Length: 568
Image (cartoon, rainbow, N blue to C red):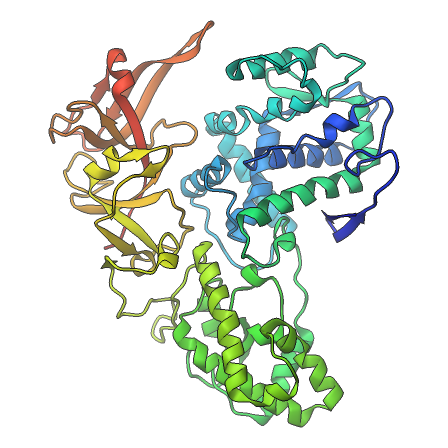
């Protein structure tokens, strides 16, 4: 029995005679190959491509046509919109080497998409898809980055024998050739045109007739992939799809209303009275995805709005635990034993408290809260949730504890790339990297919340100080800048860190430079496209453009992409 994730939640895909990997059989289709499409998958592409494909099949509905054509643009939009919610909304990692996450990051930066906590609506999803469609049509190289291999490699199980001995760089072309032959003894899932795939009518009908099982099967594998890359994160099955509505906190709100009638508690953040309160998830809902009482606390509406989706400073934890303990004892006084125990069930199960009697012991309760919340807080911070939020009475926005330094050399391992990023001299960053990793010790670590950076941090981010005037006004002299290794998609008009053997920047007399990238390409029928010209342009018109000659192309490397100037 396999647990699959469908739109309505978890369901069982039953073991049935005649099934391949729990999929319904069809004597005219190669279900065995179909069931092996997700074998040896190390990145998200195959899952996202297939989920995007079946999403389009569902939208199209029944048809009498011989095949169903789906454009590459539509497939790419589907892939990114499906990846958006686990990665951007719920802050799950798609994998260290996964480029889909990087492409989403480029989209967010270029379109200035602002992450907002709160419920997702069908309108939100529609707006996201429209933005993605418009962006991909304007930056089509990102479509190429997404679909460079996956449409072809997904069909590999259909042609295991035919691909034996074929060189890796020729497999895509061979798969296109085989799929377009339309062999009736081995009908492929789809064939190819220049701008689309054409889903075979037999496969379309098979998927439509068995959509709940096939969709659940695919989402189970997608969920398993995400769980393996986020092993400590709770509620992964709830985070693979947008949640269009949250469970109302009616009983939880009434519980706290009754507590507040008997006890004059104050907001743990603002210290104000709770005449007008909101229920706050101490650990963000988008991390825990539940409304358990042990994670809820009444706070002032202004504090709740300010905190939003951030992790609070752990300096609030003692106050949170104290009010929780008061509420537990008050609830015991005002409710019947049976109803009180019903409210307390998750305290016992989730906080690992052994008995209802132990809930009267403040030291046991305090220890249980700390041993549960602290590691979850750390995991959430590591996964990109902004940490260190504190309430500020004057402007009611998040700040970080003033005693924390901006730069520091000694930090905990768990803080690296969760709230701190490494600072490197620019020459080290340009010259000591390989395969998107830097092989040098940082000179320091920068506390990112202290510089008002609230985005997701990953291990391919670093900080470098840029000196010189060639990129002004975009990058002022002496600016500390955020960079990311691995430039995904089109480099055109993007600011990049470049290294070359010998001197590349005549103004600075260095082998590295930060400039805006432009190139022209020509198509070679034998070898594909090649660069006819590469230019590195300054933003300051008083400086000259650097041209990379064809004979220097092999000694020229784009090391990283400029993300933004930091407020230091």
